[in-house]
Image (cartoon, rainbow, N blue to C red):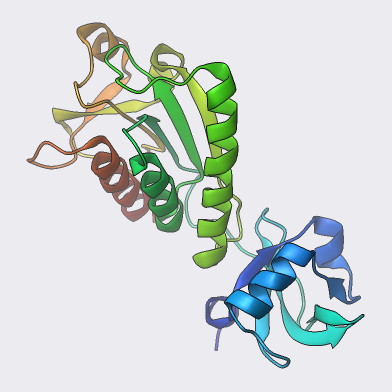
Length: 233
């Protein structure tokens, strides 16, 4: 079994700070994580967990009972994983309702590193600063949970919404009639339901197509993410 297969076969994954990962001492879990491992996942002594610092390094640790509760004992060396592709960004208008939760969760599972939220000229959903801060904090929790579930060793990030013109110069935009997504496309911008305005398209570095059909914002984001990961390997 390769080291990557060992990581993927672990019962779950958790994130810790770099100093905790490097220490060969027992890893004492926070109460919320201990509850998750024991009550939700029902892990028992002898099972293995992948422990990562969120910066590309990880190691296996065995479940033990220590200090009156569940803890982890390092069971292998620290492994540094090589990136298979450059960091990937999906910059996207905010879809309605809870679709943004689904977008973030699935984009992280696919391999996106940054979800940059956008306010576009035709955006229906716009968040004021106070609401944006709360929503982004919540979405980052969703992103980190998706990273644990998919055994990622780089922590993703959801960035607060910015005006779309701030990112168009460094991103290609998803637009019917554009070229195919290429290996060098590491940031793709996804428009709102009403599409891009002429001014936004004029400011885009390039246009890429995601297929023959008109897609919802959240669907387009995931298609773009999949194409980016596939083309960058």
